[in-house]
Image (cartoon, rainbow, N blue to C red; front, side, top):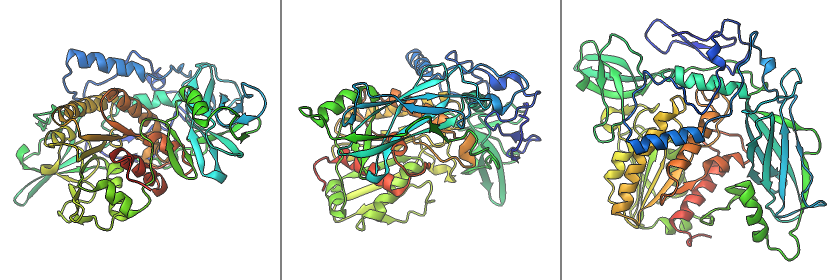
Length: 549
């Protein structure tokens, strides 16, 4: 194992072995001795190091599907940088710019028109980039109207990018374009290597106890070969792998608690250089949008350009308006939410971003009382009941890998939990699983979702009226652990994988990605309350589209 040699890193000894891991900081200030593979290309050939990661067995059909998914999320190639490597050779948001292209029809901008933006990337020397692969996000917004919509970025693979927005909100309003460089293209190769060379960079521990004897060992899916014997905790029903080093004196049966070990934190990640930095406009960054054209409805104009833009929805006056399947209704009162959930049994599974929904319901529903089951608030299981209205809400965290403290007896996989649900017209299943997978090879995430999909299909086969809602990943903050171990680039990959795996199945998505990206509040793993309120409106609209204000 060869550590990376970079500047301005914090080193955290998260293994009891005699080595330390040094974090990659987006290809900044490379030294000549850095291994050339650090800047390897990211291609669709999937030359990935999975030698010490345990993966579930795939059927031939599943193997074909996995390969298709890997090809569909393959990132554009980035040519390797030649020594001496320098941040000056990477994409620079300060030199880069965007421009709003003229209206295709000429003249003024009208509701229903399509606004296109062209982004041109330059490095720190001021040289134009000749290849793509930068991680960019874009948003069109009107602060005065609390309105916003996310743009879809098209990579032309030559250093330029296009973003298309539908002009959606009524009335004369000035709209502004915001473009953000999430990561330079050169960083993606580093992130790719980090996730395949160091998938064990986050520690997971198990506490073993017998009488007065306590022992703690390292656990994970990706266990480097050692002379230490392993305890195999692979789930017998799903085949999900999980291992711990065997304690010196106790047996594998004495495991009582799963915990997360230390993480790597970055003390100086060059914020403001090329990590989530706005790109300026080379001309006006605003346009004025007038009312709709005579003779054409807003719906006709919107649907025409929605096909091109691909937007899932938009905010107007702080309220999320869906441009897909189910219209979003506003559940602004306790009585409206109660009426929607009456006689419902709602089971939530996943990470803390799903638990956030459970906690939101407790805050807005005074008749929904949480029962103290003497379980950790992070992991659950949690239970809330409204006896009067016959409402039951539960939450349970997903199985490992998970960075919560969980009793070993309460570590359950979502697929197994779904197999224990009878289902029916009054049953709602909600799950979201992504935030704890950003440090692992994407194949592990793909196979976990495939396992959950099988359970969803079994549930819908025995109880077709069961409502299944899936929360997608969302953009995160750019602080500490999130910057390199749970980068938005990983979340983008996870989002694409999730949508592909559940495509064509009778499930509903809450598009947390666009609902966070289109909003003006700062990104966070746990979005701010106004965003959560809109997510809850989407969820409740799936459950009961007619009962709202």
